[in-house]
Amino acid sequence: MGQERPNDEERPESRDLGVYGCSPPHSPRLGPTRFSVFSGDLNPKQTIKRCKRKRIQACNDQRTATTAIGVMAILGFFCLVNWFMLSRLHEGRVWLRRGLSENPKFVSAQNEESQNFEKPRRKYNGTYGRMLSLAANALVENKLEPKDLWQEPKEQASAWKPCADQRSWTPDDGKNGYIMVTANGGINQQRVAVCNIVVVARLLNAALVIPKFMLSDVWTDASQFGDIYQEEHFMEYLSPDIRIVKELPKELQSLDLEEIGSVVTDIEVMKEAKPDFYMTHILPILLKNRVIHFVGFGNRLAFDPLPFELQRLRCRCNFHALNFVPRIQETAALLVRRLRGSGSYVAPLDLHLLGPKSSSLILDKKSDSPVQEEATSSSSSKYLALHLRFEIDMVAHSLCYFGGGETEQKELDSYRQKHFPSLSTLTKKKKFRSADVLRTEGLCPLTPEEAVLMLAALGFNRETRVFVAGANIYGGSKRLAVLTSLYPNLVTKEKLLTESELQPFKNFSSQLAALDFIACAAADAFAMTDSGSQLSSLVSGYRIYYGGGKMPTIRPNKRRLSDILLKNSTIEWNVFERRVRKAIRQTKHVFARPNGRSVYRYPRCKECMCHA
Image (cartoon, rainbow, N blue to C red; front, side):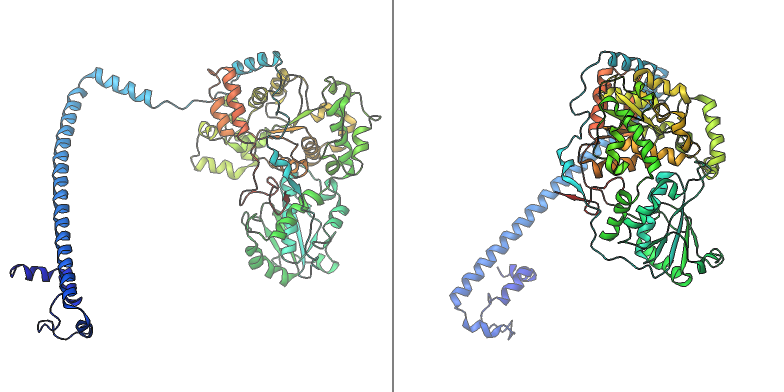
């Protein structure tokens, strides 16, 4: 025992025992401590018992530690043996591989196995002869359409109601100056720009001059704001929000805005700039010069973070303040009425699209032209609108391949050099992903052939009246013939309207696009081929906002659809049909606007719509 005590006293536990009174109360070894005052108060017998218990606990702890060390030693030994065996086995495999590598039969078998394991990526050839034949046979059978084909898939859609017209602020006086804007792009990009600049004007407490539209060499349309939208309604409806004037005051009209630094281009404003940017960089210029001119203004205002009332103002402008001029409304009413045929009726969106006279415009058939007779051959009054975004500008900008061979590639390269010079230069300097990779990633617009295969697979029968929106389809009448061979009731605005009815809109692509917008928004069902298209986004958002959950939209997932279509040479029609329906069904979920996404496309948010 005398030999064990020094070792025990070296353990931390033993030193603690002295503190708690295991040594005699007045031990000369310990001497007086700051705890000595408590020693005399303890019972000696109790102190001895406590000391014994703590010594027993210390011994048990020591045994546990010894056992743990032993277990770890055994595990280490097994790990060492295991490593030794694996190393020998690896050396044997290397030796065996070296020996077999000299055998050509083994090398050939190994290469074949590697090729089977890594399947090559399927190549797109743009040929759908087999699938189109299968689709034609399926349509001839004239099966019953799925019950939910013309309906919104979720009851939750009807729980969202429009409420962007509600205000909870007083109008600004615009005392900080005047904002001018020249918006670029087509009608849809211009519409987004107008809504954004309205919010910027409110943010900076500035008066807004009626927007102007830039002449584009792509759209070649000289239409201005008043040629497309009702100026008086725009000014009056937004008067509780911002001050709007038709022109600058005379004292500011003579200023050279570029010389004084009041011209701001889209290059100087980042895409989706936040409110802080305008307050920090734009407001000082406005306060100094009293006027600022945004040139090429488009998608230059972020969706988040944005104060609640400013976001609501953006929705209010898009869904309430921008009404088409009567000339466009009246011609669009003719178009919609002929599409609905003999069973013409007034739909939920007609009032918002066509104005207070919508009922008389839709139901009065006295002024109809003979063209209507061809469109009303089917007794059904429902029609499907298809936005076939396949014009040459879209095709060229996508950098995809569409089965036209070398001729197509030369034609699109030439178009890019003329209309998209920066993109053309970049393609020569930088290596982009191949056309096949772009297609598998869902970055290519659907071709007319792919669009019609999708409609047939979804179950739209052969007699369905299909309105195709969009002008100058790349590939011309030859490509449209593929659509009409499967759906003979397929029409365009050029087919439904007479020459005299279309004449006022000739050479005005934006005004023709407005007719397409109304026909698509008023349709019983709307299908898009490119969800990134501005027209498709605005139309689908408009149908959500005013549709009351009764205006279905078909929005394909191009990545999944591409995977299905690449199997066109082997897939059976019933499998193709099932997979397409599943892919489309998964895109029809009803959900609130995701953070950072467009309120024009996803108006289901507290700023635009109220949720019951």
